Image (cartoon, rainbow, N blue to C red; front, top):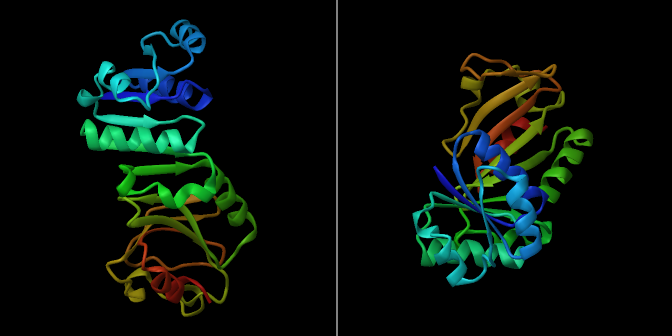
Length: 222
């Protein structure tokens, strides 16, 4: 798979190294020439270009049109949006992944800006903090499918209907908009089955449509 990464900071270089280890064809674009030269020696196997990925000519020179994935990993949200939009609209890249640096900008990172998947480190860290202190609350982990789906987690308390009524997954009758994808119990991941019962302190991970919050609450929040 051919992957182009925009941004030669710690995030972009780490991704490049991981992808090379997985035998992908990786091109990294870094607009600061001195940094790009340094990265050429640090990233064997990676094609490093001194170029501004926000410019059409630079993306064309990087042959972004032949890329399978574009990763906008700069430290500037505006740049990442421009890179994603150009990659999708002008070069037809099948999959764009964009880094969000400021969680307040998360609402912008959607299909209209050419973003297929957005990754917000601040939002993820906040979610992990919430997970540590919030029992009986819906915690968002990630958005998927152009923002139409969410990966969420709920830590069950004793009042959760699934626990209080001792219901199996099948008996919960969850709608099509909501699917349990994993349950973590006593730090062990469990594959959900129709006969599974839920216990207090279970961490339930679900794939949910954005409008399925009430359905999730009805089953897992007391």
